[in-house]
Length: 270
Length: 266
Ligand SMILES: Nc1ncnc2c1ncn2[C@@H]1O[C@H](COP(=O)(O)OP(=O)(O)O)[C@@H](O)[C@H]1O
Ligand SMILES: [Mg+2]
Image (cartoon, rainbow over all chains, first blue to last red; front, top):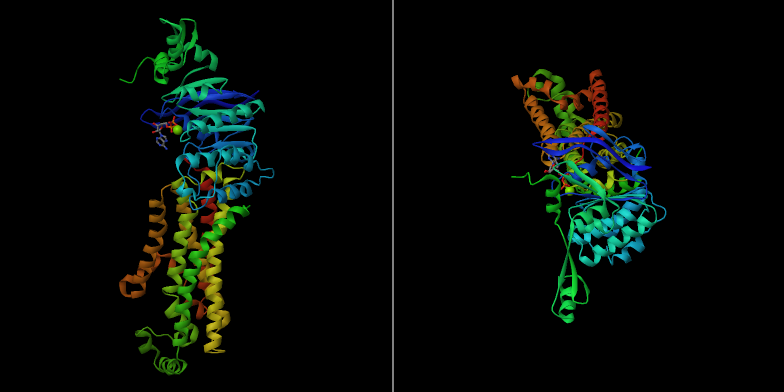
């Protein structure tokens, strides 16, 4: 069953910008990575799913409900982290979370657990929060009503590596709980750890959709290096993140996202 | 229909402005009412009755000499029009356009709450503020008049005038609100929401100056609220109040529709 379904979605901003005839779906219990460089159209697509903007052509549905017309029914079971957190900045984080809980009429609130997990003290004014703190606030607000479907727009931006890992752990946990997740990103590493499938979008068009494993395989190169002695081999393995085996070390290099894109498109930006 | 949590938050944000404006209104209303001099007015009234043409040429009509007429001349031309109008402009813009511009509206829309409910709640906040200002003004006027000049005030007429004033402000509020829903940019929301009522007010002042400029009265909605006509029980004045009320309701309903259909780039 497809939980999130986008069919022939078009939103033309003019000047070749927007999304064009985009189709993909996310199945129940799947984590889908929506990968693309800045300006590719990820946020635009997500705005449609969230019911913020109306499709010019094509359609978006979540659980067979129309994302534009039945938005408020979908939102009941949906958790969303915006690309840019811009909540009421006159409130403190605590006030905002309380407001959101009441506004959404949340009965069973997971807030406390989430705050501990991200070591986040929301007492200060949102206006005075750093980007990372706002991001944590966004994460807590998206998870605290225990949704079934998640939509994240570049969720780890602004988080330090430790917190990025905590977030990834949380996503993996939710995946085990059978949640459906759509996550946009412009960093391959971020999605490969969590996603079952990855869709690559560029200039508003879907370039490829493939399983994360296949994409990874296709774009990782392995090198076997033989060193003079074992000590050297071990330190080489350590320095270059390789696997040592006697004198032999295997190191892997991943293509950057841009290289992957070029693989699909050729470099047509010139 | 409305979301109580949002209503409470926004109402709290109105309170500060309401207190400031209530203080200004208190000052003006109490001072002006206390300045009324029944003896002087009685003399003037006799003059007017004796030679109506002469007196009307200098802008004096028979009933302006009553306490109510005095209040109409000194309070209902500026103070009681402008301050509630500024309230409408500030809050009208702040309730929708400001949040659309800074993106804060995302937490209202990305929730199991209909857009219509969000819009209705914000309208309720605006209308509550207007109601409180008008109610407060009315009570203040009644108290000041009762303390200074017991029995001198035509209370039923005052209530009708204030009902008209209330409908006028509902209408101004609806103008501010519809632009707040229409534009995602506070620059334009304020520009139109403040610009149109201000321009109309200037036309009204021109029209009051008389002469050829009097025709300006056909181009401003302020003409629809005419307290002098209410005092002289002119039939039209009731219809005009009704027109203001119906127009306000129509604009509020249109605002809801605009907001529900709007693309939000958040
Ligand atoms: N409201 C808008 N009006 C015009 N162009 C827009 C608008 N929103 C986004 N764009 C343009 O559309 C393209 C896709 O934007 P976006 O979906 O935000 O990309 P991403 O989230 O993948 O970085 C960008 O080039 C952006 O400048
Ligand atoms: Mg984006």
